[in-house]
Amino acid sequence: MRCSLLVAVALVGCMNQASPPPGPKDFKGKSPVYIPAEEVAINICKWADLEKAVVSHQGKVVVIDVWATYCVPCVKKLPDMLAMQKKYADKGVVLITVSLDDKSDADKARNVLKKMDASVQNFLLDETAEVADAKLGGTALPVVRIVGRDGGLKKLFTPEDAFEVSDVEKVVKELTQ
Image (cartoon, rainbow, N blue to C red; front, side):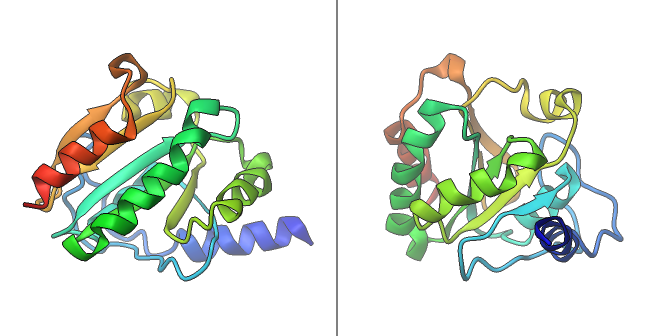
């Protein structure tokens, strides 16, 4: 039963893939997929589906928080990322979370998100490590991508940056003024 539900969620969240995905450096494209975040859910998707979700927010600042349940710093930053999104929501800021957990740990990731009331768009990336490395610039976590109103990548935070949520917020603030 649980597998059937996960398959149903994945199919609903990953439909409408008619147009080619945009390039890895930006999220410009057409025919976006929009999955409203009315309750805490997680959509199992490929990179192209994530890109389409980002494109659906064109004209807004999109913060993509890449995390995993096994990444302690990621889980610790998540509540502050959610608070930042709420603070700047009226200025057109959208938060999308992307878990790099294995598909078999989707319930575990969903439970973490539910505990934090993460009623934003939440995805679990169903890609090989090689694809994730190529698209994210490595799979060391945490990673935060900030996409500007024009759909272009404005800032990429990686573990090498030793960043805090306050650093992310500074960029968001600049992009919303």
